[in-house]
Amino acid sequence: KYDIYSLVTIGDVEEAISRLNEESRLLKTLGILEDQIALRKKGLSNQTKPQFDLNIGTILIEDDESYGKSFGVDNPSVTVGFKFSYPLGVRTSRADVRKSELELLQLKADQRSIFLDLESSIRSLLIRIKDMESVLELNLGQIESARERTVEEVKMYEQGRGDMTFVIQSQDNEANARLTYLRNAIAYHKLVLQYRALLDKLLLTE
View 1 (cartoon, rainbow, N blue to C red):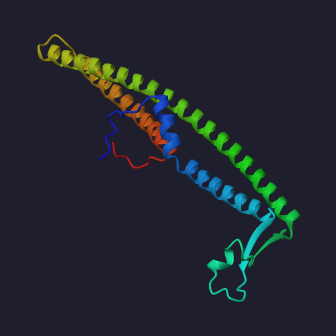
View 2: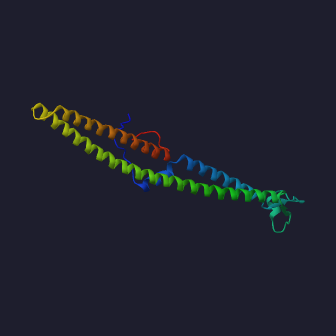
View 3: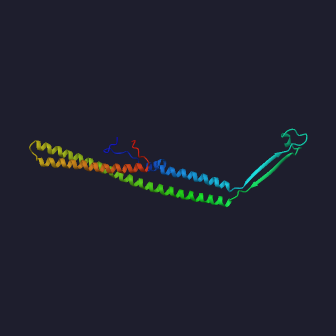
């Protein structure tokens, strides 16, 4: 159950920034995309490299009954060959590698920009939330003061030392103080919801 009259426990800025790094779905998605591009770049880089293959063969000669004997020092029946291959379309592959490198650089720049924007928004929201908490505390004091005034006016009226006009006025002041608190509480919780949305924490579990 969501209680609009209660305040929410929110950590400091550094804790919020740490949570942003760990919990933001947007940043996680960009991180996965970065890994995919890096993996593709690695595969393309391998395609541009020449391949060297070592081929070792054995020849069974007369009176030689096993492959093992073919490796004997006095029985040179081993053939060694090198195979060199150069991949076709190297220029295209290198262009693709360069394209992937540029995509990685752009993605990292985008990640940094998005993170800084989110960080700035979080810092601003936390400041506004803390300010609203101070306002709500002041409102509570106003409500208590108005309530005490109402009690006093009612008591004086019942004792015949007051006027009903003052009773009604004090009751109106108390009602207005409560209404002001309610409006500010709504504004406060809107800020809290914006803060949670930035951290991808829309489910209110606290």
